[in-house]
Image (cartoon, rainbow, N blue to C red; front, top):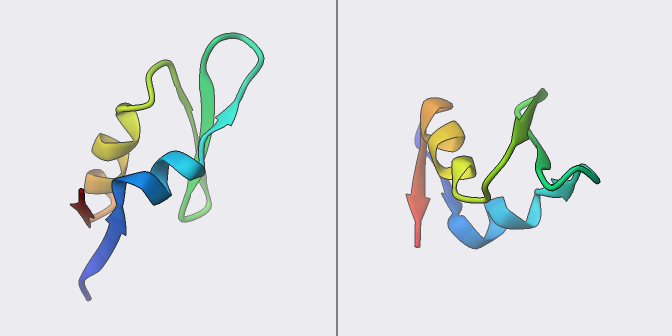
Length: 52
């Protein structure tokens, strides 16, 4: 199965954590991020092809 996501859609999933970082949820897993660009790496680890 091919999974795709736009980078913009991934960024929309970021929730500020109140401490200068973000919480990001993908496929039932929660991640704490310091920078927005980290969503790309996480999505790729889940097998997503990122569309820019």
